[in-house]
Structure formats: C-alpha cells, structure tokens
Image (cartoon, rainbow, N blue to C red):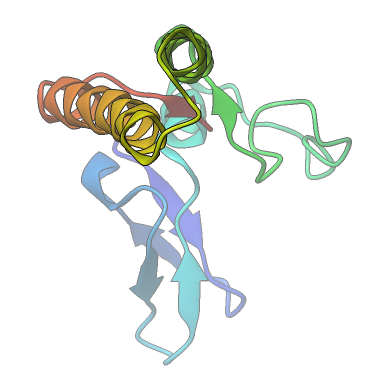
Length: 131
C-alpha cells in the first residue's frame, strides 16, 4: 500500500511520493500537510516516527534544513574563492581605481562561476540540503 496522510476529520488520504512537502485537500475541505520525502519513505516501510520526534531541532523532520556534503563543499569553495580574490586584489596595485575595480570584478566573477556550477549540479540531481 502507498503512503497516506490523515486529516483531522479522520480520513486517510492517499498521496504519491512526488507530493512530499506539499499540501493536499481533503474532501472535508481542510488542507493536510504531506510530510517530507524521507518521512514518507519511513512510514511506508513501517517505521513511523513518534509524534514528538524532531522537536529538538537536530533530528530529521525538525523543519531546519541541514547541508549535505555537496553543500558544505560549495560553502568552502565560496569562502576560498572570496579569500583568493581578496589576496589577488591586494597583490595588485590597490591604490588605483583600476585595481579596486579588478578586485571587485574578480570576487563577483568567482561567486558567479560557483553559482553556475551549483545550478548545473542541481539540474543533474545533486542536493545541497536534506530534510
């Protein structure tokens, strides 16, 4: 049997895994929140979480997204890129307007390249946050 969510009226509403994290409408008129995909999969497998799970803010389903390994790599790359741009800009003649402009251009350019790489990876299914 597929995953279901329960409305306050008591009805069990069938949902698809693709509806995870959204809301569905019950025939009684109420909106019912569909849990995250990880919780739906656990529910289907028979591992239903207790009602107070996730209240401490550190366990899955706490509502606070956490970075994946790919996300941490991109944070580290962004910091390293900004530091490298700063060092490169100081190596140039920063007293002139051209040096200031080049330093700013270098910093913005590296962040734009990282952003483009992140979009490219996201298109191919990489996740930067987890539930």
